Length: 98
Image (tube, rainbow, N blue to C red):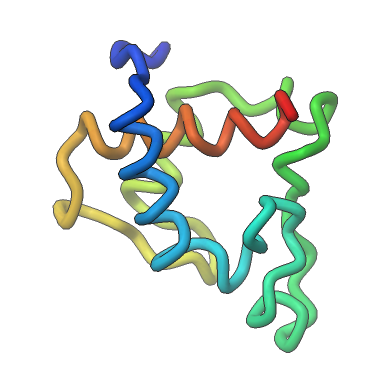
């Protein structure tokens, strides 16, 4: 699956806020995979800033992981609408573009 949602400044701002609440504790505020909880639990997470590492992750795969969880990562499930999940994919992708 490819991301069917075109991100806007507003949707990315909302995704950034959700990321701060739900993701940053493990994935880091800047997406480097070295959030406080991940460091404490000695988890080795993908660095979203690494363009080469992110090339191997398809949008549909990232959407699925956010929605359903993976390993120790809890699922967002039905807490978010599909458009919000797709905007989160776009936000995570934005780390590698900086």
